[in-house]
Length: 303
Image (cartoon, rainbow, N blue to C red; front, side, top):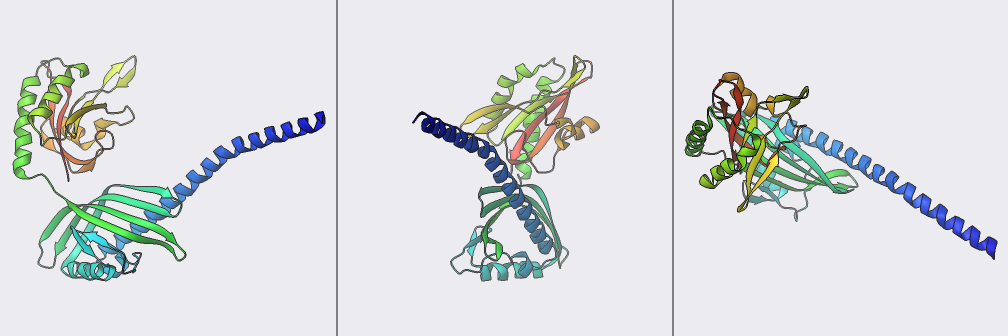
């Protein structure tokens, strides 16, 4: 009996060890499977973008399911596969050329047979009447693995609105005034909370703002500080742009530092701060010794 108990105990211990040892293996296997799916979806999306630039509607939508129950959306309108294909053929027939540049994209894999591609793109097109069209797109493609391969079961495309000239002018005036108030002062990162949150309160159209300080040497190491404040509903949140994010090479920082003049950035996805697509107005700030303090910014979200 005692030997039997010992054998059972040993078996239970061995089983526990196997379960524990298999768990990281299973997690590692799942991560590899997700990575493989991500690579596949990115490859398929690159193929689709290539076909759209060739103005080939049939090939652009060749992975969409033709099931009559499937509904696709573009520009706020619902389409079946046939009506979507026909609508884009009509649009493409009016173009000489077009180019789609990905600003940001990511793939989410909630299940092993389901993947979601989300992307923000800049679309440039030239019509057959030589009209130049520039617009920004937000697209979602939901992919499902079927016996014949990965297929799109839902597609949603919408245009993001670029802030108007009036909105940009308001930001230029408002940030210019703030920059004038802060110029020639000795500022520290901890000084910026009341200043920048008050700025957001005064200007509801502004999504976020920061003073990205010029790097300083601390114990032989370069130190960067950029307290970022942004609105979330009716609240204001604060985050520090991570050290791994070298904002000094970003367009919104590097260009005004180089030119010593205010500028607007191109649209970009702000992974380090608020996590939205935006454009940024930047003004370089200098202290009383004409030494760069940092770059003062104001962000407008593209919606």
